[in-house]
Image (cartoon, rainbow, N blue to C red; front, side, top):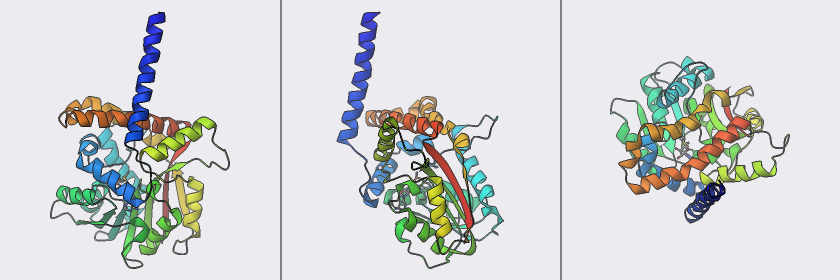
Amino acid sequence: MFEFLISFIFLVLFFLLSYLIIWRINPRKYVSSGTVASAYDSWTQDKLLERLWGEHIHLGFYPPNKNIDFREAKVQFVHELVSWSGLDKLPKGSRVLDVGCGIGGSSRILANYYGFNVTGITISPAQVKRAKELTPYECKCNFKVMDALNLQFEDGAFDGVWSVEAGAHMNNKTKFADQMLRTLRPGGYLALADWNSRDLNQKPPSMLEKIILKQLLEQWAHPEFVSIKDFSSILINNKNSSGKVIFDNWNSYTNPSWFDSIYEGMRRPNAILSLGPGAIVKSIREIPTILLMYWAFKKGLMEFGVYKCRG
Ligand SMILES: C[S@@+](CC[C@H](N)C(=O)[O-])C[C@H]1O[C@@H](n2cnc3c(N)ncnc32)[C@H](O)[C@@H]1O
């Protein structure tokens, strides 16, 4: 029994030490939008993320009491956000901007299923290249490398603005909101989903929560998380918003994604193994962060915010 305990402690220490070394050698701390671009370039070029998560780099929506597959849940998420935000009230042919579009998973659904004319922008050149490869010629989507904090579009250029899980990468949330609302025409629809922290002023984090938040920021190139309440105030106070913002917390619908994303690696081991030993190390590296994310969202330290408002 004693020997078993010692071996177990050694094993735990070994893994902890390995993670600390890997995280130190290859940190992904946010420094500038350039850091975010190179992180996504590398996640795109090594193909690991796409093999596991498919073309959607966001959490899925798991309707209560319904069994749904990891990838189906991501598609479901897009449809849920479209109908919740009212984006589906826009007629076919409407111009929609997808801010932080990844490799275009949402953009293609918005174009193919809802008939919108979509422009997707991302800070990562490798994602734009991949998004173009994945998009058939007849699909009304175009993709550009652009910084969400400096959108190169005229005021009111879009009937709808859509952004999923990109805001946590922005170091200036006011500018992020301002750029999206500036390019949205008066009366247009804004649909947003993002990772938020709980209101830390109202309930300050414990020592453990501080350590976890630091890890969640530093591992995936996030400069800061804001609360749903704070981001809503930013939207409400923007001169281009109608001033009426509706928000919700979708933690319970999205949280199964975290464990599912680990199971996905077990369900499709070939997706990782066929990319070689480097991919195995890379995927193992992400597991602690995924588990911390799961824990933080489950315990309410993090909140999955969704927002809708009109221009
Ligand atoms: C978690 S991924 C979400 C991708 C996509 N919305 C999806 O749901 O599949 C975050 C995206 O935000 C983009 N992003 C982060 N910072 C950005 C910035 N400053 N300007 C433009 N895109 C940015 C990343 O390049 C990436 O495409």
